[in-house]
Length: 543
Image (cartoon, rainbow, N blue to C red):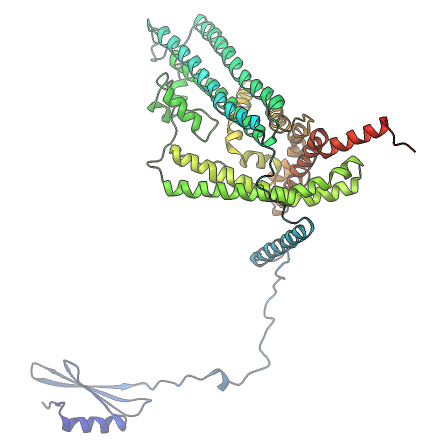
């Protein structure tokens, strides 16, 4: 057995072998020799193990050199049109193309177009923002603060009413009625009559309480609060307490009935969540205070709760509320106010084409203000309030911007209000045999009345625009309802287009224009102009 040593003498031989194409390797178990050039050769491997010498010869295959693109000769006969295929935007295409680039283009056009309007507005009117140019009367602020603390008192009156009802329910269980063989105690005719008479009495007290709350607030705002913002906040607070109190009364009524008369299937129909706080253990002051601050209009004895409060999350959401509020104030004062003021003479002279032009001009800024207000309220403020109260269900809205009709929009953009009317108005009427159209009519009529109170009372003009704008949604819903049921993309696109047109042009901008004109006609420049014209008619100028 011969063995190769890596000595300085062998180094020169190795270098010589490498130069001639022969490579010597020395692995741990033997010596491998490769002879030949770069394209191939013979590989000899000598195995040295336990003193044995075995030589294995392998013939390597030469590697073909890679040909570059330039080395190949180009042929002019390549088949470019090898199969039938439609155009990218054709209806026959099998794959829908992405319109991401067009979306980016529309965003750029929108930004550039509005930037031009910003520059034009600054050149034409200058900076209209003024911190001291407000019309907050001291009495308005005092009355607003007074109403802020007075309105929740009606919710606490509802608590005392339910406390008396719960005490009466406890006392009526002794002696306890004999259960039936099935383990339930079905109420007799006398028990049902007694329960109904008791509920009628409780209902009367609740109705007087919530009606007094809403009527008193409306009276004070109409006659004693001049500024529309303070009046709107007070009216919103009163309507929220009105809805919460109604939900508190209706829910406890059904819980009390299940507590007194556990008919077969009725206790099983109660949600599993309610077992953590069964009636009448839920009638406590702490339970009511939580419901008062919870971001919902629906009363439940128990709500899903989160484990802790993320204060960083709360700070971010409140920061968004502050920034968006400043943005809304800036847009209203700098952009919306000039358009509204310039529309007064057009409305007074009934120049319809100019009114339509002002309406279209107002639609852009009103949409921006509305979207900012929606995000500030439903995304920022309600999430911050839910985090502070550890309220778990934060589905305050859904993707309403993709609505395929007006009905889908009203079901998804304001879920707390939608859930209230569905639970306490629509579903009870349907269970009593009323048709879908009758129940929907009742829902939208009540909603239209509340919208008119919310807008007309703070502006001191009950002109019915908000009422009609809400009530006339019923025929629009009937028109777009077939489009929601279509499976084709064209029907859904048409329904979404109808929704956005009615929302951005004939909805909010028109209502804002009408109430602003009514306000100016009563208190502002139009009123002074009419007074001046009346004075000139009575006392004509001397010739």
